[in-house]
Amino acid sequence: KVQEEIDAVVGPVRTPCMEDRLRMPYTNAVIHELQRIPRAGIESFPRMTTQDVEFRGHTIPKDTTIIPLLSSVHMDPTQWENPKEVDPGHFLDEKGNFRKHEAFMAFSAGKRMCPGEALARMELFLFLTTLLQSFSF
Image (cartoon, rainbow, N blue to C red; front, side, top):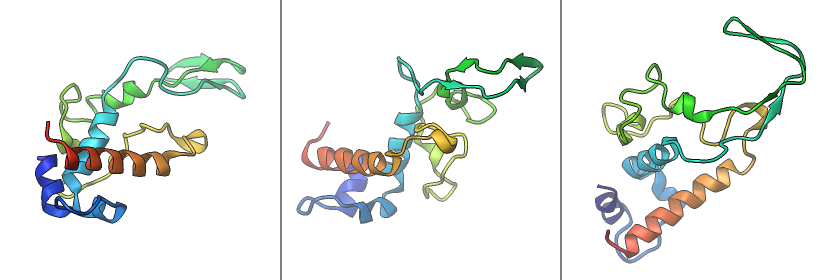
């Protein structure tokens, strides 16, 4: 389906560009869904509490190292319908338009989120669409 969208929007002659992303909701949803799926390794940089914190009935003391586990949000059944399934529909509305999902945090969240997020999103889109335009899998 991504291949079909690339063929329909970009065609075989010109190179994909960022303006194409707005007209390629399914491709954009696939990219987001592949980032949502958990992968091995540390997902986020460690943080340290600056004061005692109460969290879900537990006290986390000041100066405690915290390593956020983004996959716990990305696989949370209260946030995602069928979280263990690869489903680009997680990022599509009922009309097939791309929609953001507030529980999606592939680049972390808050003031410590990845400063290269915008560049990474562009590169992921351009890399995937150019690859799939050139090769069929």
